[in-house]
Amino acid sequence: MEFHRKVFIRINEDVDVPLIGCLAFGIIDRGTNVIEARANSYCPLNCIFCSTDAGPYSCYRQSEYRVNRELLVSYVKDLVKLKGEDVEVHLDSVGEPLSYDELPELIQDLKSIKGVKVVSLQTHGAPLTYRLAERITSAGLDRINLSIDTTYPEKAKLLQGMPWYDLKKVMEIAEWIIKNTNTDILLAPLLLPGVNESDIEEVIEWGKKIGVGKRFPGFGIQLFLRHKHGRNPQGLKKMTFNEFIELLKSWEIKHGVRLIYDEKDFGMHSAPSLPILFQIGERVRVKVVAPGWLRNEWLAVPLGRYMNSRVITVISEKMEIGVKIPVKIIENRNNIYLAKPI
Ligand code: SF4
Image (cartoon, rainbow, N blue to C red; front, top):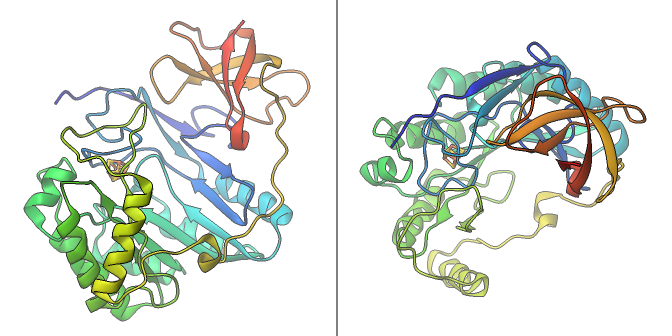
């Protein structure tokens, strides 16, 4: 494996860009009462199945981002006003949310926003320590979606792509959280067909034993899917989504626990969303302000109407920071903008 050097960009300190528009940082609004808040993009692990190609050995990434905490909180605050009174802020990332250096403070800030009912986060647990667990749980974190894909420490080192990954420690701290705090844990292992079916059955039994699902559903098993810029392990068995659901149904009977949920079980529903400001095919004049997340990508902000209201990722092999150019929008789903120079 080769280590690729990346540019580290602190948003608001190194470069001033809006927090809406880029998958790698800021706010993702998918039109529900769940706001995804992405404070950092980096991750210390190198999972062999990572859909976002995170970690030190990433092949496609050229930049990692850290968002200023106050700025992120102010964006969430504004969006909550639009969403209503029962918002969940989910701290997720194209990396590892636990690696954000002001995470307890961020959780506390988010919990104090009127209208925010739940703050949750997604993690593989690598940076967990008892001290960090104590700080994030007492800051008011409601739920941890913990991805543990096996109960065997040596196998976890292989799956997580790092020899230092300490699964035993992660499991011990998870158990401590369940027993000693109000924070719940949802176990979210990734099923790699042909690789870890029996491991996941053991994760289910372990979850039952420690009592996950105190306040929310206890399990959220996911099926591995190939992604264009993700890491795709070789030799996986093929499994359709219907086969996956059938497998979950059989495990529900075998293990006597519910494994299939829908959005309502998480209190999720549709809610007003931010307007899409640029349509596909629209020509927009932008200023290029920083390297983008992946290679051949650049962060740009619109000029003129909607100046600085969204960040737009421009795809181009070569570009100079500071240039002002016209681009054509090629993607705008969920206010995530991709464009090409005209
Ligand atoms: S912990 Fe998550 S973000 Fe990090 S490498 Fe693994 S799957 Fe990717």
